[in-house]
Structure formats: C-alpha cells, structure tokens
Length: 178
Image (tube, rainbow, N blue to C red; front, side, top):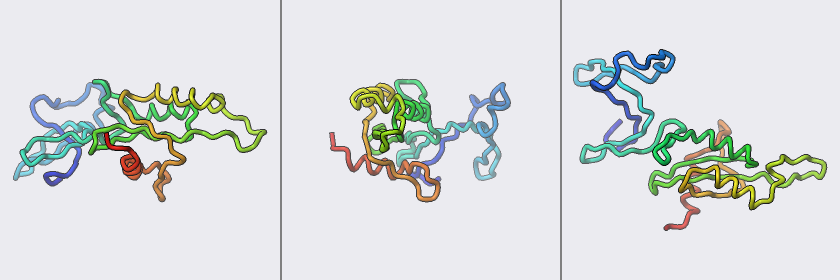
C-alpha cells in the first residue's frame, strides 16, 4: 500500500521461522513468501493480522486488527465470542466495533423486546428485568467499552451482515465529545 494508507502488517527477518509452526495446519496463510527489493527476491514473512500505516516520519501506526480479535488489558480477546455471549444474555443483535479516530471501543446492542403475542414463550434472558439485562451486558464487555442501546443495527444491503463501518459512523455521531 502507499504511505499513509492502512494495510496488513507482515514481518520478516531472522526471527521469523523458516519452517513456521511445528503444527503444519497452523502455517496455512500465516507464513507467506513475498517479493522484496528491486529484484523481487522472495522472502518469508509472518502475517501478523495487525493493520498499520506508515507515517511521514517512517514509523508505523497501529490501526487495529484484520480479524475479530482485540488486545484488551494485555490479553487477546475474540470479539465474536463476546458478541455470542451477549446474544445468549438476551440481546437480539450485538456488535463490538473500534473507532480508530477516538481510539474507543463501542458495543452496540439491540435488546429483545417483550413478545408480541401473549402465547409466545420468551427466553429466560428476555424475562429478566431490563436493569438486570443491562447489567449483564455491561459485565460481559471489555473494560472501557462504550455501551449503546439501539433499535436496530445497520446491515449491508447485499450480505445482510452487520455493516460495521456504517455502525461506527453512527455511534461516533451520537457520542458526545468528552
């Protein structure tokens, strides 16, 4: 990528293993040979799954992850597993997203509403009082995550998946400045 653009970070050098992991199944896509220099010599690189951009001074700026993991309190956290736990706790939809500009983590949650038909059987999670459901959601989130309750989450018109880019913009616009 060009300087200033965000791209995936690959590492090369004497500390990158020539053979990769001892478990060959973990090597697929993790270690790749990329052309380096004017001659295009292939050099073994480690795919970090980190996103970065080169600053004007030549240093690298960390810009997040290319996968669904985030480093929280020095430990890697699978954000998809947190989203699944929020769904199990009675949320209709949940998404954890990162606001790169403000360096802030947001959780957007749509709670299940009361059943529309009196004969419908609500889940045990949705029968809990609202305050208890909110407290449970907050307990599941990483520290310093801004919690937002929404009526609906934006979805990509083609895939139907949560449109995280649009969601971040909506949350940033709705968040008061500190």
